[in-house]
Length: 46
Image 1 (tube, rainbow, N blue to C red):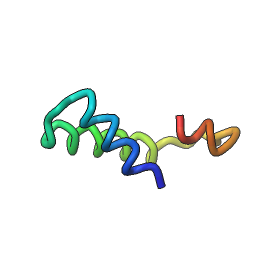
Image 2: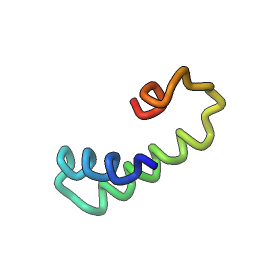
Image 3: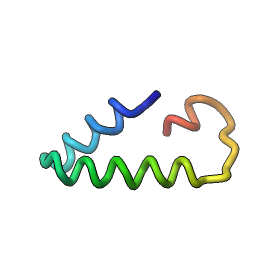
Image 4: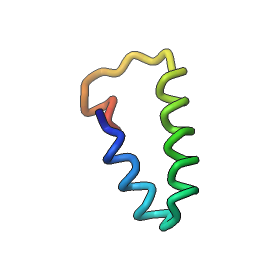
């Protein structure tokens, strides 16, 4: 749902496609493995 946004943010800050892929994978894994319940869609996006 938010993958394009995350990739764009990473590219803006890192300016390197390989690093962007690595960071994106880390973010995705943290999200999938988190057992937290989000208060709202905006909280989840943040």
